[in-house]
Image (cartoon, rainbow, N blue to C red; front, side, top):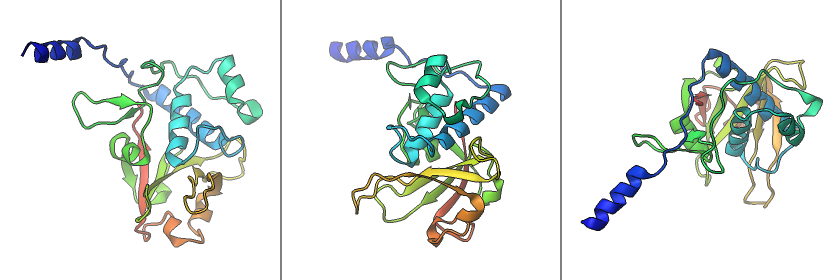
Length: 221
């Protein structure tokens, strides 16, 4: 009993995760602007941490919520030096990571920097519509490809690109590693109109495709 009481006391005394500040409309707009810019930039200068579709979302969310200092800009090396309005609040680090994503159904909820595609969809995003025309910049196009080891797949709807302003329906995504060929996968960029005509029907973001889950909107923070 004394051991159990001691363990309970240690849990109660353990430092809690840093508070997650609520973003107002201005900061949410700034977050979306940074998130889409950073996801889009991956197509032009990939970074080592983006190895699949969920890693792309993690990278863009994490870096959008950081303080964008001159050193940060040097390290990120966004092509063309593009920047967006700065957020007025930032997430406090929990050790070496940021509490970006909800990873539990418990109360209180647990947060972590890492979340896979399924966790991002289930606990950190809301379904907007199964009609891709409802997508706004920063939204996710979600697919579920049955039979794959990691069936959920995410694409980021950018809208109008800072790097190619000729269209307003750009989408970027990472293909993820190909276990059959052993290749690491790559970043791709396409218009929503072209994706609707994808050579493989299972990758078309249309309501008639059962593999297309719909448009999801992130809840961060």
